[in-house]
Amino acid sequence: MTATSFDKKRIKILLLEGVHPCAVEALKADGYGNITELKHALQGDELARAIADVHMLGIRSRTQLTAEVLDKANRLMAVGCFCIGTNQVDLDAALTAGVPVFNAPYSNTRSVAELVLAEAILLMRGVPEKTSLMHEGVWQKSAADAFEVRGKTLGVIGYGNIGSQLGVLAEGLGMNVIFHDVVRKLNLGNARQIDDLDELLQSADVVSMHVPATDATANLMNGARLARMKDRAVLINASRGNVVDIPALAARLRDGHLLGAAIDVFPHEPRSNNEPFVSELKGLRNVILTPHIGGSTQEAQENIGREVAEKLVRYSDNGSTRTAVNFPEVALPAHPGQHRLLHIHRNTPGILSAINQALSDANVNVSGQYLQTRGDVGYVVIDIEADYSRDVRAALAAVPGTIRTRVLY
Image (tube, rainbow, N blue to C red):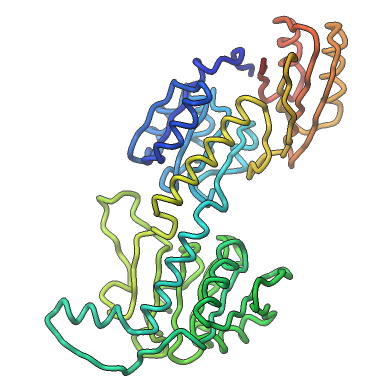
């Protein structure tokens, strides 16, 4: 399939779920004005109809971009996830369709770290239960089960961008920081890596989860591991909803083994603000429940909006796919005075030769060529000095295994 010649005015963009206005500003500043914004998510057939003629799609965490939906998006050339995770997108299907997916993996780091640290302080002081009682008219002033975080041990499971920054902030309050990760990590400050997860659980007064959603992390904090946690410790999860066994956690909170918990993400979350929230943790006074707001600050949303919009613009203008989560990564120079041809294809032997043969037959001189592959998909970018013709584009599109082609001026 071939796209029309590159014309920013003809690029149709759909932004869902109330993407921050700065994203629209960034797109318009670069000449992309054909933008539709919706405050809510779309699903299934409704989503498929909405993106049937869309070139670039912006979503957050609630829109589920399935293989079935992608199969009906005939013009879609890029997806921007204006959030951290990309679990809501079938990345393999997007790759097969020749659609790179971009996100903002670092833009909400500070916001999540601040929330976790605040929750750690509140839980160690028993504030959730005290404020609940106050709302019921009960005055219960006591220092029982109330502790400073200074001198306590924070155990971070998953020492990535958020986990490491949390450790730095916690050290500023006088906490000792230990962390566990599946790979060897360079520690920041005085943090120490603990290879044995059980050792961390038995040592930490506060355990904070910062791991991705994978088969290996599903129910990572199950009943057995929760039982290994230090008596009267607290658990915080602001990473992914499936990494904590919620019924098992509720049991450990009810029997008093754990002092408290703060949970921001859940295995099953409402798809909109109009749906009810259901959880075994509801009604427990020693639990802080938040509706997946770890990165929901104005600062984080603005950073995410700008970052993802810039990545979409860079791909549309230049063809660069650097930091795409599912696509061959190609970092490209500018191409002033040249035409740039993009060719996305099945990664099978002979395609690059066929592409170059088509250009040679058309007497086109290649000034630069960039190729990367990922799995079953290859991505080649070709800069040419001479003008191109419809015949050249048709010849490239006719190469066996072609997924899509595009021309940049």
